[in-house]
Length: 252
Image (cartoon, rainbow, N blue to C red):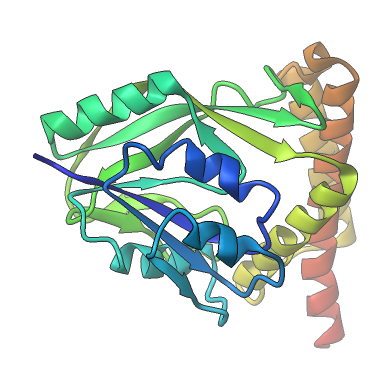
């Protein structure tokens, strides 16, 4: 019988973690949680669900931190999840059925995301097919500092899982700011010395981001939330390109 292990990397997720782990605890054969230096009750909550809790405070980036977490997993399959996500009943059944088949493929699922208390159905957020279930021996996450992906040195096919993964992306503006700051810095860190930027590039990319998200991706159909998200995305885009340019400028 094939087994499945759940993989999480976390930091200061005390408000969300219990709900996430409750959605996998009844069916996962193993749960591995790697913490990167929480100063809230994240570790205590994790240990109430699993004994496989580890602390790696020397942050190497999202991809490598997930690789570290996978190194503790001994099951046949890996299911990666974030602390702000929850597995639906339908997705649970689909995961277990896929693991039982034990085919060497990558499984994609559709993530449904909410922001500031509203489910976002457009804005480029839905559908959101991502690989989260994969055979441990044949695949892992890449080394990306941010926006990491599952990769394999084999030509594995992919299939879709039924059911949804629920994602509570941003609960408040404060949550948005805290969450995106690290991503923006990691983006610039990864491109510093490799990619050039300028004030004009920052402005043009920000405008393009807003137009694409609000009009092309029909963010206007998400109402005021769609406008807010498009505006915030444009601001974040401007921020990261300006950060990259400022780093270049200060080296001159």
